[in-house]
Image (cartoon, rainbow, N blue to C red):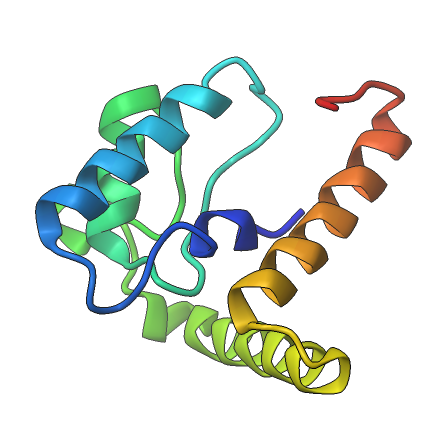
Length: 122
């Protein structure tokens, strides 16, 4: 399950305090979904993942300073680029905003994952 739904709230130009608030709020929302391990995606970085870990005790893509491996060393940046490309292609083909495409793709992935687990968030 990807974490693109987080991107729908975040933008690269978002102020640090606002971004931190949204990251921590998202972490709180997924706290009880213990099977879900948050990881970096579009609009997030190692600092965001450190905040997730601080908030709910689990995350991947952490900074080296707290025991993580830099994202570029594990190839995560390439996956993020691929996700970005997929969102932009979907937005272009449907004539919608990238944010809407990201939400649509994320919703599809979450529904597919929930279907496989036989429980739902919706």
